[in-house]
Structure formats: structure tokens, C-alpha cells
Image (spheres, rainbow, N blue to C red):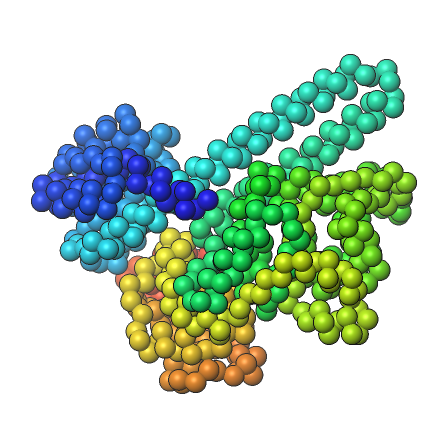
Length: 518
């Protein structure tokens, strides 16, 4: 799906606003040479606003220093109007001050490129933000379409209930169907909203290493089938992302993807979560409940941490895999569900089988198509790409801009073994961005990375390191004390930390940091 959206970006309408003709000509030429077909260039800010209002573009490249109105004013005006509020705006300016960049993001811009710019940088950022914008529009349309379809179906069933109000048995059946559609509507809406959030921001399926590309090739081969898939790999390698990719490349992509974490559910509730229950079937069952397999009917169910599934539930799961049949707790009615199963685990299932904690027949049934997710230490060549991807996606949320990474820092990140894999890398990058005082990414001494060490860092060093929140809290408190607890203004803690005042205050509240009483 992302590939189609990138192709769509070339036909997107781009508005270029700059009061200097040479800049307009250069930007137009660069984008035109790259294949972008619909380009508008305007010198006057007010005319640019009128043009955007009359025909909203897909993206705006906006200069800052212009007569009549500066770029920040133009951006704020467009963000206040309904038809232009969602248009991504990239500032292209000769201004170099960090405060100018902060002001640009506060005005509503999504990015800030300094002049003189590199053609490759312009094209890369335009491509990313157009893809993000098009992907968000696509998912919003999908949510609206699916919601409308289920709403129509729900109204039709409600009308049928009204017509059968004198037939108790028929009324109960219709009521059950309404509840099933209601649960499915809620599940699908939650799934689609979650995909909007993680669309590109959390999509960590990035890498060009041979090991990683082999995984993607396996996914492309297995996705169009309905075969059961078992994803193996350490914690944090992205097994859930692989499951989501398989679903979205399959013929079931328009149906729900239901996620179940087997390790997070109490053993006494797993059967009810899987298959549902009837009212009164056990203490606390105050109403009928639809199980996850029924919710995923026609779609896909992702069973994460399958190695933690209690042995007594494994036989029932095996039956569903083989016959697609099950019964709700407290019911003798056999139900069916056309559900594709994708499972994942970070545990050694062979060892569990020898211990008698996992059924061999279930293992063979799940492992029709096994996919092994390599740990990050086996694909070190992808680390630099992931680091820059996380920086790009985290900058708008953190309100900070990172422009460079020294070779010493990048070597340290590449040499580290990453026992927590991609998830740990993302956390370390976010933590370093928060604590880096300038526009260059720095690894603070308390981080579990040794910048002066070339070999991989041992895992014991990681376990001895302080927790992220403890390190962050101590650093913020030390800066506040050095500033006399002055948060805003010149030489205030926010300025020294390179954060917006509101961002710093939010972090202080979350970490429980309060100024000591006199």
C-alpha cells in the first residue's frame, strides 16, 4: 500500500510560495525534473492564500521572509481554515536560528529546510510528507467507508428487529447479530485508528540488509495465501509489524486484524477472550460476549506470545486451526469462523515441547510458514537508516531538530548489541534527542551506550544502567537547579535543554518534578 501512495505523490498538487523569482524557478525545476506533474508558484503571500483556499494543494513549500506577510503568518492563516488546515507545509528559508525553526513548527509547519538547500533533501522531504498526507487521507477514507457500511448494516438489522418484535426467538437472534456487528464495528474502528497513528510514525520495517530483505521477500510470498504463519524472533524485532504487513498484503485487508497478547491475559480468561461466553456461564458473566475469533471472522487474528498459551487451551486452539469450529463457554452450539491465524513468539518452542509445556501437533500446525525476524545485531547495516528515520518521525512531537550525528556516536550505536532490538533503539534515540542540548545528536553519559568502545557492549552493562525516567528526571532537575528553577526566558531551563517551554513543563509534570519550597 505505501508503494502505491508514493506513486500517487507524483500527481499531487504542490504550491510553491516565495517572493524571489530565482527561488521559485529553482524549486519548480527540481520538482519537475523529479517527475512531479502539478506545480503552482506564487510570489505574493495573499495571492497564495487565495489560491490555496480556492484549490487546496497536497503540499506547500513556503518561504518565511516575504513582504506584506511572512511565512509564519501565512501558515497560521491557512491552519485556521477548515479546507486548508490539514495541508502539510514545509518552510524553506535562509533563517538559521533554532527559535525560527521552533516558531515554524508552532505555526503548524511539518518541516523546516534551510537555504541554500540540497536538491536531494528537498525531494526526500517532499516525498515523505506527501506519502504521509496521502496515506492519512487513504486511511481516513477507509474508516469512513467501513463505518458507513456497518452503520447501514446495523440500521437494517434494527429495522428487522422492529418487524419481528412479536417473535421472541427471532428477536433474540437479531439482537445477537446486532451485538456482533457492534463489537466488530468497534474493533475495526479501533484497528483503523491505530493504523492512522502508527502509519509511518511507528512503521519500523526499514532496512536494506540481506537478512531483512529476505524476511520481506518471505512476507510478499506468503501474504496472498491463507496459510498459517509463525513469526519467530527476539523481543523488539518487529514481529507485530510483520504480522500487520502480511494482513495488509492479503485478500483480507479490508476485514479486521484482531491482536491478542497471550501473555497479557489471565489464564482463567483466555478461553472467554478467544471464543466468547454466554450470559450466566460463570460468575461475572453478566451478558453474552463475542470472542476474538468471531470478531476476526473474514479477517486475521494475530496471536502474540503464543509460547505463553496455557497447555489446556492449546488443544482447543488446534481444533479451530484444523476445523475452524468452536463453542462459546456455556453454549452447546458449534460456531465457525473463517479466520486466518498469524502467531508469534520469542520463546524456544522446541525446548517447550521437550518440557511438555507446548503441544508438538500445535507447533507443526502453526509453523506451516515460519518466518524468522533477525535481531538488530545481525543487521547492523540498517541501524543508521533506522536512527535517521526515528529522528525524522520524532522531531515534530518533541519539538526538536537534529541535523547531524557524529561518526563517534553513530559508531557507538552500530557497535552496540541491542538486546531490546529495534524497540530499544527507538527509545535510546528518543532519549538522546530529549537530552541533547543542540542540533547534533549526543549520547548522554548515563545512556547504556559506550561512545569510546568499539566492540559490542555487554548486556550486563545495560541491566546496571539507570531507568530512562530516572536519568531524564535527574538531568532536568540538575539543569533547573543551575538556572535557579527558571523555566522560561533567556538562560532558562527550557532554553538550555533545547525544549519548548510547554514541552518541558509537560515532562516535569509527568516525572513529578516540583520546585522545592523555601
